[in-house]
Image 1: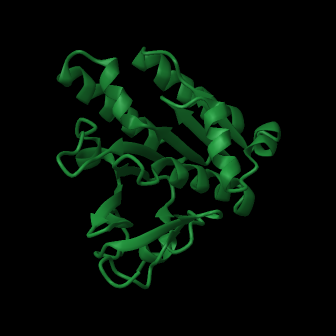
Image 2: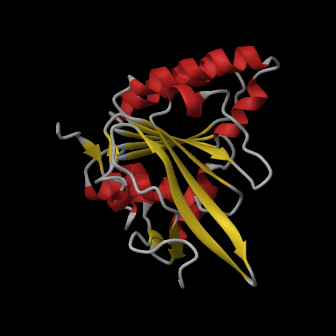
Length: 231
C-alpha cells in the first residue's frame, strides 16, 4: 500500500483510531452537540501542531472572540499568547457577513503565516450569510474546494443534536474528506462523551464509538475502549 502523508492531531488516542492521523491537506468536518468538546478539539489540534510538529495554525472564529478562546486555552495550560506573538498561530474573530470577503481573508491569512493547519468554528454560522439555499450550497462547496488546495489540513465544525444535523449544504457529503462526530450522551444517571469517525478518505478507521474524557490536559480518546463498556 502507498504510505499516505499524515497530519498528526497529537490528541491522545485519536490518531490511533484514524491510522496515524488525518491525511495531509484533507478537509474534515467535526460535528457535535453543544458541550461535546468541539472548540477544545480545535484548540488542541492547533496547539499540538505548533508545539509538537512545527506547523503554523490559523483559527477563524465566527462566534467567539480571541479573548474568549484564550481563556478556554488557559484552562488546559495551552499558552496561545506566546504562539500568537511568535506568529506560529493566528486567531481571527470574524464580524463580517460577506462570504467572498471572508474567503479572501482566509486565503490571505494562510499565506501570511504559512499555515499548515486551519480551523473554522462554527461552520453553522455560514447559514447567516445567505438567503437562498442554492447560493449557500454553491459558495460553501467552493470554499471547501479552495481549502483543499490551500496546503492546509483544515477542520470546519458543525452543530449536531439527537434531533437533527444542521447540514453544511453538502460540504460533508461532497467535498469533505472526513467527518468526525463528538457526542455528549445521557446514559442512565450520567453523561458520557464519545467520538466516532464517520468517514476519513484513504484511511482505515475504527467503526466503533469510543469514549472520550476532558481533563486539565485536554481531550483524550480512549482508543482501547468502546462506548457502553464500563468507563
